[in-house]
Length: 157
Image (cartoon, rainbow, N blue to C red):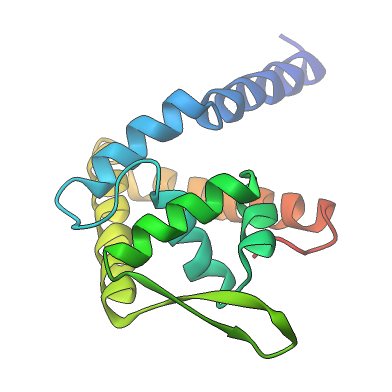
């Protein structure tokens, strides 16, 4: 197999894997696993809580744009998270007509639990990899993520 064919095949394999990873059903399965046992969060509210953690205090509109969800859906899930005591709403200091969504202390603890669950899941999945394979994958995934983040002008945290 020539180098060019191998490169295209690798790129096609990565493209297919990213496509599968970004499918809603794949994400929902992962989110369900991660949120198991975390009070107030489920597979539907996970992206809102996680996105708010990565973005920081934000309006529902800004958060919805960042996580790729409709604003009304984001607002509905934010209300569920607020009822669970994981986020709060406060006036937006830059726009008196708007409110910002903010993580509460319980929300921050939930995010820590979710991040630990994700790290544990990935560590478990990579137990058969050599340390070199895991390190190389992490480095290359970070590089790809940085490249992708720059495609939207660096707006995505």
